[in-house]
Length: 306
Image (cartoon, rainbow, N blue to C red; front, side):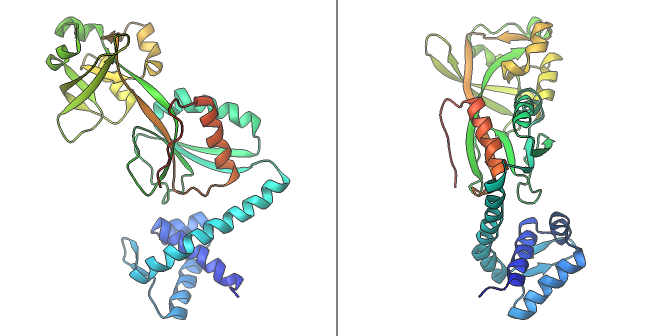
């Protein structure tokens, strides 16, 4: 029979393995660092095997530690869900949900939806990280990350919750200086503002709104940024043509700081995904995810990545 102390040690071990840090695991578990280190050392003595290679800079699983982690991580997750199921039987979903998302998406799209959700679920609290970087879901204990575009990390679970329209915009001053493109091919004579790329150019795929035509144009530019607000600001300051969601540029459009470029053309919609480290999620996270899916109504359904 598995002793309760052994299950507790398993929880400690899995947290250190996931965060690759004794100090982070200590904070997450609210266990004193000395206690955590002592319990891991006791496990290593009991089994006569080293679980972690420790240096002053990092903590890495040994081969034996990796095998043990692969066998017990899901048991720890299942135990946490079992406890959550007990709470669900007596009350509505509750708990603390940590979310990460791009700044503009959080302010304009997700934030208003979360405020509506919070009114319906007073037992759930939130911690929001608005940043252009992709958070480390495991190491930073992020429950749900909202990301634009394809999710290429096969270790994560991604569910499409919506999509974002993409159209071209530039400042009137830029177009007065460089000319107004009358067809997609004209874009080769213009500067683009892009998300980061290994090349100093970007392939823009465009489709006509009415005629069903599609084309591809290689556009060059000087600015590659991973922040939509900065991209919009650079376009307003005349640095080039940017591909943006019309919903995120309503104010500069209304004030004339930006104008549409090739208004009868658009790029394919950019998918919006909710990303998780595991399919095993507590009721609070599942409730948030289901709410976002229902409100954002993705046209292409749900996509799961193992």
